[in-house]
Image (cartoon, rainbow, N blue to C red; front, side, top):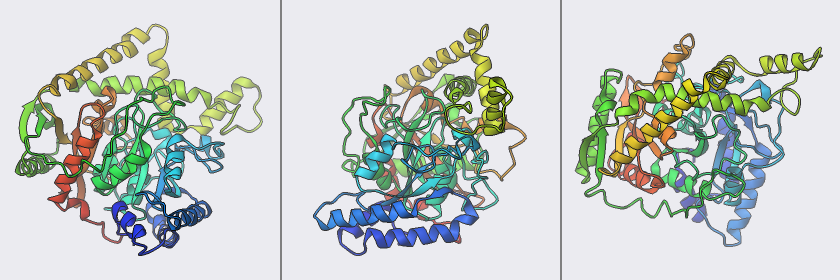
Length: 483
């Protein structure tokens, strides 16, 4: 059962080959047995899962149907779940039980999805390796000595290890796509505003976006269908009709114009990954796609712009965690200042403290214009590059990451080296565009991803291209040894 995709589970439940309760029990047992190797879960929700599974079986018995009805999933531990710990991977929120469900959680529950638990993540989604979590690092099921990527590494590791078929995740600068690439999954960051951020604990509000992680594009289409849609509780949610993402998966790629930016193939890219990307291009050409070289001239400025904007927004968003209203509170504070200092100093880890300090500096008097305002201007230039490119092509293709997954601890002493791994993914967040990573092969036994970017609200096009590619390749079917 654990090898089935979300689509296969939907068909099996519809054909009454097994019940949601039976499947849920199998996967909960598998998580209990195998997750100690991976550390991909922060909380297991056995009682809730079995309760939801029984309810889903009853709904099916009453004639209801739906691709997510009875399907087991997990949520990244920054989606608020009522009455269940929502920690954001931080000591600061270790004792926080959310009083309500995030919109994404509520929508998926209404569709009948079964929540198995909350997955591990970089603290407050700040990281590219899932090593900054207060609950310990997550390990990559393809090689337990390597990172699974971050910040959605827990969701990625759990799905890659066949502990469950799919999971929710979030992407601020590549945190869905990069872990997908590192663990041989398909991961989709939707257009900014496509998925509600209400109840999703914020890192950088103008960049964060929720999305699906699964083994196939078909499964991502199913999960995104349940997640997407307008939410009046979220002021950044966009009131745009949600198409049937599964309906366009079978469309032909004949005549599809794919742009390949020359800037993607610079000295920073591992040549072995470059070769796999070229192989992916050839495969898509066989399916009728037309390849065109394009340019994204301002891509070189994206990393410095991102690492001003994101920490600036983080310093503002995380100011609410002060030991007064909720979250970690220090013992016996001498006065209010001591309460603030020690609660935040004890509650936040080093990476979060680093980004808060950088952000506060960039927003301080005398530096706002020099840093934050200039970074926002660069953001506009990055967006303009994409708009110009999409006048010539339908989608943009390139590597998801410049290197395969690195060893645990390898970049801990040099945070900037880890930041540079986001070079191909952060531009989509700066511009608010949808982006997808899909499996493209292996380097030294470690998975590699190819990234696709599309114009606003064209998630269906990305899923269509990825699905057609996966019908003609088998990279996505490979399973890590031991899982």
